[in-house]
Length: 230
View 1 (cartoon, rainbow, N blue to C red):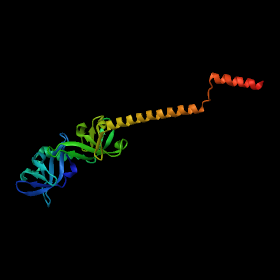
View 2: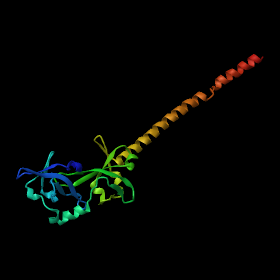
View 3: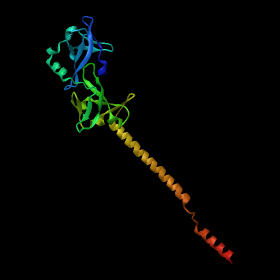
View 4: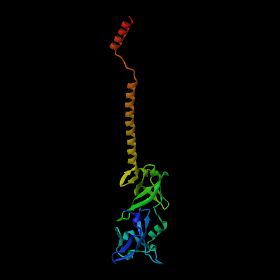
């Protein structure tokens, strides 16, 4: 998977002609299929007409460049009505709020991850006050929990917060598991504290209690007192 920001400004190279046709200026998202529909090309220079490359025409996304078979893969948006419609919708998830169906704000999108081979969006990285109340850091949200990927707000299914994964130095753990772990730790702590409290209580009760005498000791003491009196 690759971060969306990694696509921006990557050189686009035609394999057949051996030329760089431009740079990746932006990516066009299909919010209905949850995938990248096209790459917008920055050709540089003045009076350049906007061109796009449908993602199906992308040969490879490498570490240093995006490759296509030939430059004719680059087309005008007007010739591809479906992609032109998506460009006008202008869905850009970065910085968009994520809200559950029942109105809970989970956070804001900081990044999203794309499968370079298929163009599918796999997950979103979010941060915000809700997450800060659970742990320090960010969380990954699987794309299957998204109900609507809008241009202003992303709506997710109720209960999605239970499926968020903590991102902290490579550690991924669901919020549900974190809650269970925290609950178990709290119960264990309470039980341990209770045992310590009971042990201390028993100890101090023994120290404060008056010493008891056996019946033989009581009889001996009584006879001694009588002898002294006589």
